Length: 383
Ligand SMILES: Cc1cc2nc3c(=O)[nH]c(=O)nc-3n(C[C@H](O)[C@H](O)[C@H](O)COP(=O)(O)OP(=O)(O)OC[C@H]3O[C@@H](n4cnc5c(N)ncnc54)[C@H](O)[C@@H]3O)c2cc1C
Image (cartoon, rainbow, N blue to C red; front, side, top):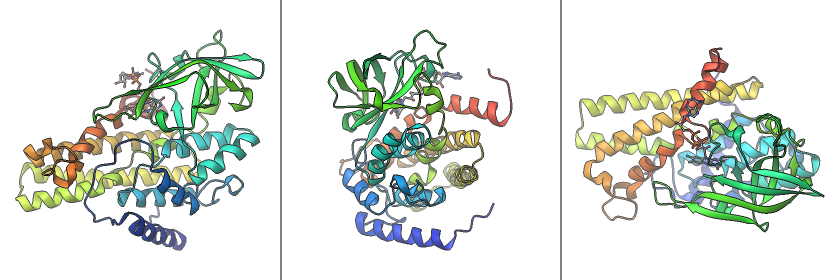
C-alpha cells in the first residue's frame, strides 16, 4: 500500500484545517471537550460544510456531489474529528445516501441527495424493533398498500436522532406470507406525517437522542418506495460496510489519548499504566491501518465487508480500552461529570467513557461483526 497523499489530497487537507481552525478555534493539539448534548449535528456547521462541497465530496456531480475519490471524503471526516468538530450526520450521508444512489429512482435521487449534500435534511434509521435487532429481518412493522399510499403500523426502537429528523428511512414488511428476508420494503417516511410518535429513551449519559418511534396508520405515498416492493433486502444490502468505516474511527479519540499521556507523564506514572498506554498507542496505529486498507478496498470496488467489520470491532474496542485506562489514571477525578468546576477537561474523559459503551452495539454488535469476518474472510460455515 502507498500511504503517500497526492498533491490534491494535501491541498484539501490544508483547506479543511484552515476552515476548522477559524470555525472551531481548535487544532489537533487542543484539549478534548465533551460532545455537546444531543446526537444530531449542529445544523449550522453542516450547512457550512455543505456549502463548501465537503459533505458529499465523492458523490456524483449530478446529485450535488463533487465527483472526487472517496479517500478525499475521509480526509475531511478525519480532520473534523481531529479538530473536535460536532458530531456529523454520518448516518444519512454514509448509510442512506449510498443506498438511494444505488437503489433509488431518479425522482428520489434528485430530491434527497442534493439536500443531503447541502446538509439541509436529516434522516433517521428505522430498522431495529423490540424483537428484531441483530436478526433485523424478523421485523414486524407493516406497510400495506392502499391506493397510492402505504399504510404503516408498528414500532421501532433505538432510533437515533428521530426527534430531530425530517425523514425516517423505514424498513417495513409489505408481504407477511413470504420468508422473512423476502417481503421487506424500504421507504422514506416523513416524520411530520400524522400518526408518527417519537418518545425519548434515556441513555447512560442521561441524554435523550435515542428513541422509540411508533407508527399508527401513517400514510406514505408509493412514490417514496425505494427500489422494488418486497425487494427491500437488496436495497438494504446494496451499500453495506460504509457506515462501519465512517462512524467508528480511532482518530476521534486522538486528543483524549494525547492528554492522558501528558497527564501520566506529569504524574510520573510508570509500570502498569505506562505499559497499558503503550499498548493503547499501538492499537491507535493499527486502527488507522485497518481503516486505510478498508478505504482502499472500497475505492477499488472490491468486497470490503469483512474488512469493515474488522475496522468496527477494533476501533470500538480500542476506544473502550483507552477510556477505561483514562478513568483509572484520573482516579476520583474521573467521577466528575461535564460542568463540574473540578472536572479535568470539563469531564471529557468521563463523558466519552460512558458514551463508547454503546459503540460495540450500535451499527451491529461485535459478535455480529466477528460472524461476518468468520464467514466472509475465513470462509467458515454459518454458526
Ligand atoms: C448507540 C446506538 C445507536 C443505535 N441507533 C440505531 C438507529 O438509529 N436505528 C436503528 O434501527 N437501530 C439503532 N440501534 C440499534 C442497534 O442496531 C441494535 O442495538 C443492534 O443491532 C443489536 O440489536 P439488539 O439491541 O436487539 O440486541 P440483540 O440482537 O438482541 O443481541 C443481544 C446480544 O446477543 C448477541 N447476538 C445476537 N445474535 C447473535 C448471533 N447470531 N451470534 C452471536 N451473538 C449474537 C448480540 O451480539 C448481543 O450481545 C442503535 C444502537 C445503539 C447502541
